[in-house]
Image (cartoon, rainbow over all chains, first blue to last red; front, side, top):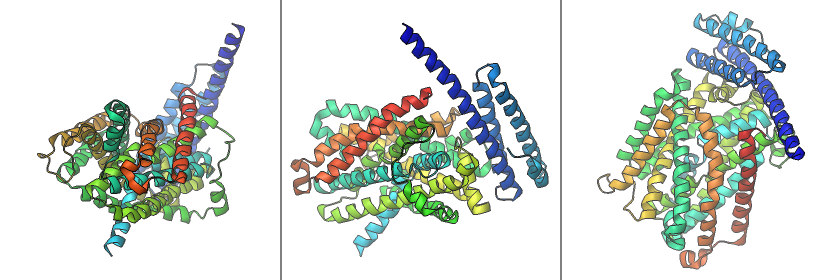
Length: 110
Length: 404
């Protein structure tokens, strides 16, 4: 029984830690994607439709990460980071709508 | 002259059999997360698919049997029912992923939602199969697929360190995310040794009435054609390794994969990515749908040929019609096409041994192959790669799904 309890708790800890690490990696990936979309759109390398689609997908990805985070205070920093990224996606979306490439370039990177 | 033309045509058409939604997605994921270190999986899968297609072509040319027909004849219906059911299920998921790839391509070009394109894409696939001939399916779309050469152009433009690229051919233990590494390795091999490719190749050889004199054509097409396909897939991997990996961008969506090409090729990059994805997936959708009809018709002894009018082989046409409807419905639900693709490719690895091992038995049977039976190199190579992929799949797939 102690072995089983030990195994289950160890697996549980690993799983929670894994989830946090995974969320960190994914948020970093979405943040970097947002930066590249901004760069490429400002340089007129990608059309407006594709840029909008990509920003929407980033937004969706961040939301999924936030939803998947366990409601543990230890993850508060990640939630804050996610909300901040959501704000940046909105900024880029607005810049694309208004065709303001300067504003898109001004959106901070990671 | 005719032989040279047939070889050239075969090499071009093998792009359709090689490059599809699975190869593009898994190569992009591998490059973005693990740089060049999963090139060995691509190389192993390519060697395996070269051997398998050559064997399938040899079986068809010498015995005039398709793979499904030969398995049913040699092992009886009771055994045949097992790979049949497994392949029907897997192929429908693969078909759905391919239709999803077409939808994603149009979505990337237009900005409209993916599910909106499921019905038009499914209808277009059905219409080509209903009205077209085998030649159109095999050659027409494959020629358009040559646009995928843009991946190689993109890869060369990134000017990678070729020594580092070559080092990726040596299998190495991952330094991080072992479960994901294993899962992507399995998915890459799965995208190459898809049962549909093998069945479709033998059925195509019988449709084109190959004879023992065509064995050299079969050998060259299998080796050079698949190597050409592998080169294109390597292009996808290298582009993503050079553009996304340094920025820590994982490929969790096709938009991220498309960005890699725009970083390299500027304003044409994302368009070329979308068009290449759309055409190769459309070609693969035709082949998978047709393969479902081939397998069922050959297994049950129905009349079958893509060159017959639908009224002459109604059951054959009914099968691909139903399969396309199911594949389209899955995409209409709004499910993430990339997730469906990953699942389909992993399923391929688990199902492949059910077809590959009977094939090996048949390929060593003089009743079917006369003096053209397998040598030990082919037997050992295919067995080793199939067992390895299956073993890694059994471990990596649950680990990946449940969090390893």
